[in-house]
Image 1 (cartoon, rainbow, N blue to C red):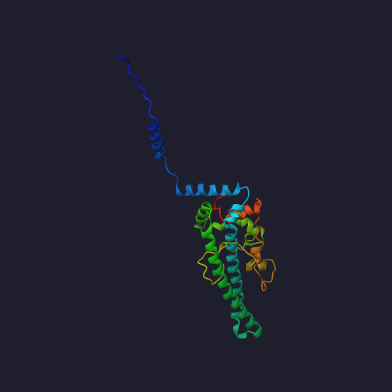
Image 2: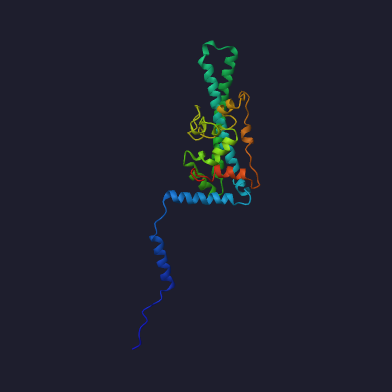
Length: 242
């Protein structure tokens, strides 16, 4: 009798089953590791894009403008409330001019409350309209962390704009003093041109302030570093990723 060959080759289907079994035996990544990997992926997509035009068309610019607009409104209202409170303390000795100023502040506060909710609804619509699944997932993951905005990217941007991150006051890290019901979303955040601490630090009269801070935010259709910084900071960035 001829000798039998004991080394049998496995069919390709059996090899595939073995490979799949080996993969299943590997330890799955933790939630933190998975989140880090996903955010790194989104961050690289932005960094290596030839132009941010597709992101601009996706509504990320409009959403970022509204993010800053909401903070401007909250910070402006905080300034008005501070001025109104200072007048109310000496209400018995208030002159007719002071009374007029108090009424003007109270009218501004009412107007700002209305503007806040209009902008808040617009921001929700812009977020819901985002066509990019990557942008939506990145934004959702980022905003689950209450301190998402305290990244090095946005701290540096705030400091270089003359904001409180360039000083030791710590205003960006704590709740802004305001009675407006912001659901604790935009009452913490980086400075706008309405920040009362910044106005005082730079010697600016805040009586006749307009919302120019939002218009000064620079977005370009070219791949410039500042535009990429804003997209990374406001959408594709998780605090702790440097």
